Amino acid sequence: MSRISTIGPETEDKLLMYFNGELSRKIKLFEKSKNRKWPDEYYYTLYSTSYVKANRNSNGISDPTGNRATKLADLTKCLSDDYFYFKQLGKTLKEVLQSLNDGDIYLIQVHLGIIKKSITEAAAELNISYSKARKKSIKLIRLLDRKISGVVVNEN
Image (cartoon, rainbow, N blue to C red; front, side, top):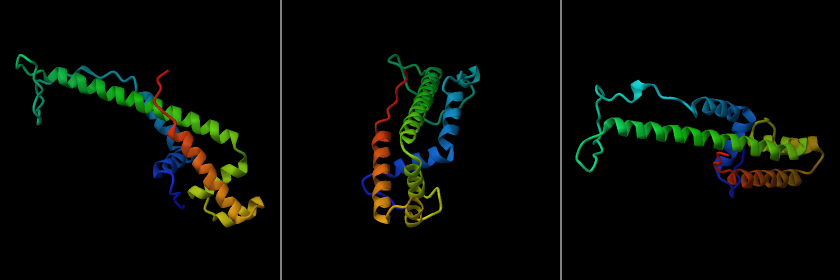
């Protein structure tokens, strides 16, 4: 797999996640945990040991339970954001890849190293020249990079 200098390595990583099914596994994992209700024991701080300085209110009284509740709410929000991001990413990749033909998807998979063939072998199978296959695979990866970089967290 050769890196394309104008795109980030995370684009290729996200495409690999999509093609090997890891993206759908992440979506299912985050879907289970996005609306998680934390048990009461998670808020109970009487026997816990804090190794960091406790936040204090303006009256000088520490509120470790409130601090813990805030951290759990923040964690829940992060899990929810991750779920919506990966769901939108999967939806975007699916739409873009459905608009491509099988030869284009084959070139992308060869470029990413999912299919253990060289671009030369793929070009021969598709009856196109090596330079055309290489340019086309780079063009397709850049297209996917633009689409992936446009994915934002949208909870609607």
